[in-house]
Length: 179
Image (cartoon, rainbow, N blue to C red):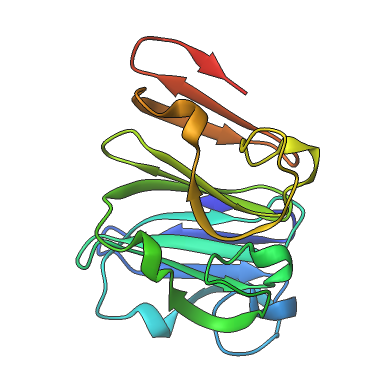
């Protein structure tokens, strides 16, 4: 399960994704902006096996990972490129983030106006709004509209991540913590 500022997501044992809460900006993935008081299946993902989902903290984006085709999907509000497809357009139905396909992404997280992906090999990718150094790309506060590998962690295997509204924490297999 995943909870955001105004919406939530739940995955069944059969890999079906249900979303509910505020529907503004299409964050629920049902093709509209309607609020859902009860969990409703994301029909666009039927036929895929969803294994992980994340909802924007105080924001209106949603991401998920499908195991059957090793893909990451995003939808909702696209401000600052936080949906990871190269622009700032939003969408009301799940669309693949092509640059993350077949990279073995095992976890995604959503902060406020940014998103993060962790691969099984331990690489960390961030994208979205870049101010306050929240993306981890050094002194570059620019917005990043497609997933970008965090170069400062090259040579390290990240095994766990967590995000807050304006920051990200990564833990390596050696127990080092990076913020």
